[in-house]
Image (tube, rainbow, N blue to C red; front, side, top):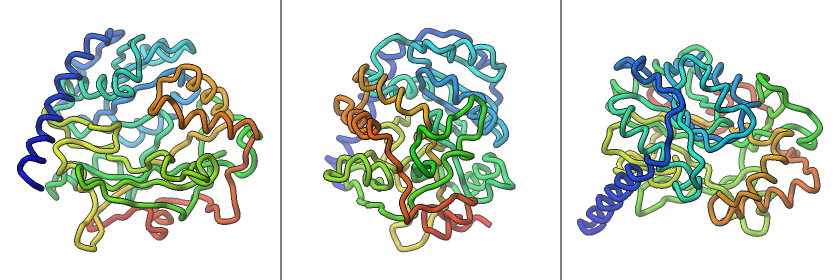
Length: 336
């Protein structure tokens, strides 16, 4: 990369950091338990709105896998989300009624919290419908993975976002608060993915899966990105440049092997397609707070009017992480 390009990325990183400092004024602390955080704790950072139905299982899932403290930014929920999180002893909560879109879809807020609280900590940055699956996750907690990453001098861990869905119309099986969503949404596309390399940032750009084939059949290039870097050994000088798709410095985006080998990677199982999704899509379409004037949610809303079935004859039923590795969707690399 030429010197002028490297300089441009340094300026962009500085601009994102300054922007997050300015946007921090939009955050109001509801409950601050950050004094409880210990030096080696694994942290989790989330921005959300009206996700009460998902939170009991989300917290259970990540507590069981080693998250010690959760940092939530609640974007003006009206369904009891904020009150529920405030009562949780391992959660610190901030709220904002400012524009999610103008906060770079919540990343300005999270960049600020990461800068202030996550320096030196392995940190997981996810949405409430994203569940990390990694090699040996059935027997080893996330800190076992981060210990190995530390020993290997690796500072970021890449994943693919894997859309999970039920067999049959998504409205057919109701989801209940506290339920494991993958009891319902247990199918996924084993193939049908496009991968390109972003030359400027160095990250992979992955698209495809059920959202591309069902909601963007004529323009698959407009389908959502499926590449994520959700687990990072944070430094206060880092910043997310675009959601959790890519980071600065750009070296953090090299979560794959350029020389033909395999780096250890995981999957974020995405539990978006439950019966609650239709109401969520309608709400977000009205708010117009998502990327590109919410064109993604417009496609969802139009497609959901037909009560679609995302399942097809090539769908695979989820078994375990080893199945995902065999299919080439993740890799244990050198971790044994």
